[in-house]
Length: 517
Image (cartoon, rainbow, N blue to C red; front, side, top):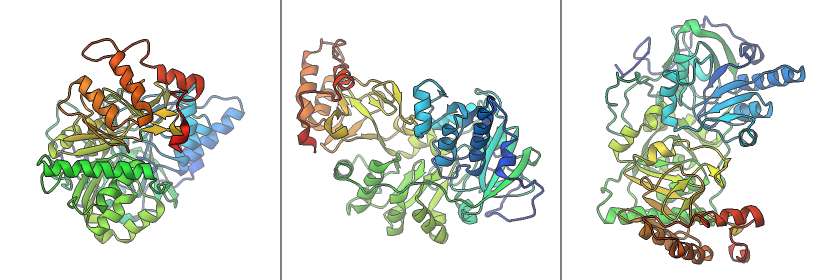
């Protein structure tokens, strides 16, 4: 039996539709069960598998109550970011007072940075245990998207697993959205288990990226299910933009670095599992790896399965992938659903505390690739806060993977905003990943291998190989002029570039920006 399993029935490999004893209700009726101040756990890891109809209805209810002068806000937990149907809808209605663990909503970003909403930024692998241990208090309601639910409480989740199994277990009441837009066969990819709380944990027996240890369904006490809302809506995952020249150059540098590591014998001939963050650069890097004739077919142990991976898997370059969500644009997701005989055995979807588990990441020797907003000359990476104060999205799963990677790679363009901003700076204004975890930095300018280097050598390597040439003289002068120490910093000037940006609109006002166009 899978470790920590809470399943009621064993052995089923795909959902079996049966008459349900649970009441069918509209989304508006379901929203009436959500009270002011409630803590609500929603499914969704990116927009994949996110609850849709019920959060929109909650947002409409909030607007109506606010118009009457009544208070209505809820505390929201998800697996990660969601999309327009959940975070954006609730954010626009100002219906959220507290949010964790990650988001990518413009509406919520504005509210959290203005102090109107509390946001708890978390490592995504920590979320299920934090909820199960009660650190956030009781979970009043879970709203979870599925393709089916059986009378005995088997819940066949849709395109993401995320933290939904834990929310189903911990919530006092449960609402299930049955979404017919998803293939019922998506459960063939699911491998669900819930870890018992410490000190009752055993080692997680995953020794291969595609190894399965759980069941194809999550479980819920049927007595907690207060209703089912039927929907037929695709996930709102936008397709990635075509890779630009900068992203392609970053991708080429990543491929070159990995090939050098293989030639040096530091990556075995059969290669190692890869992890990739979300976004256009990450997507371009995965496509670049697939186009290289010298990179052998590889596996992934990651958190998202995104667009570029569909093509790689069809070509045989990607042998298989473990993730927690199918973060695919509608066209790509349809290709997967239409070819489940091919994709089903090659993709495993796990709960996020397993997909992002530090112990498994270290055991498998995962090579990690993530992006940063800025990286300072000593290798501290800021993934979350613009100028150290304005939250963008959150740390997500990057910390889970980076700290435990066989090789941790961070990627970013050398500049942003048409050259007004250098991403290589004297001191990071916020640190999410410290110098002890960041091993390799890659920009379109080049590769900085920081392994085995002391602070000053790290700084010179980053400046000479990763910073844009227009900023190298300033960064070099800062390093040489700073007071001697194990790490050299001039506390009177370490944020001078950021202050210039605030005052003049660019980090070095005397730079000719034409060279960046």
